[in-house]
Length: 68
Image 1 (cartoon, rainbow, N blue to C red):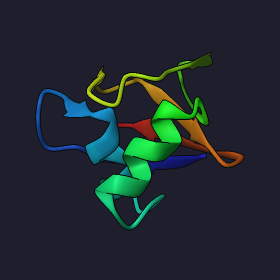
Image 2: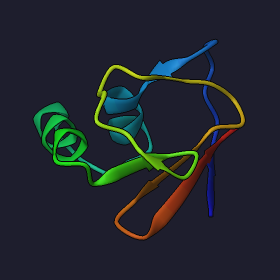
Image 3: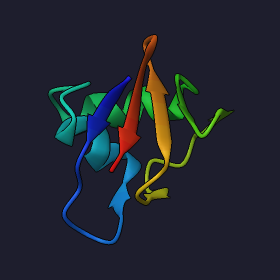
Image 4: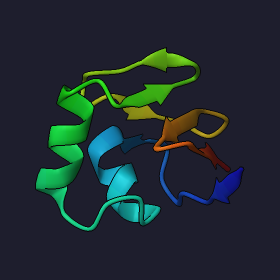
């Protein structure tokens, strides 16, 4: 599990995937989220604008990212 620090109250899911380095382009993030390849707190999430907060966990391609 990787711990990723955010400096704001929340971050949108597509932006988070770029921030943590899981994807290199926003368009990639959009595609992966819409295709149901990303889960948030154990549930598949297809909302690329979902607001993530400290304590949330994002799973993508076998890697888990925890927001701190």
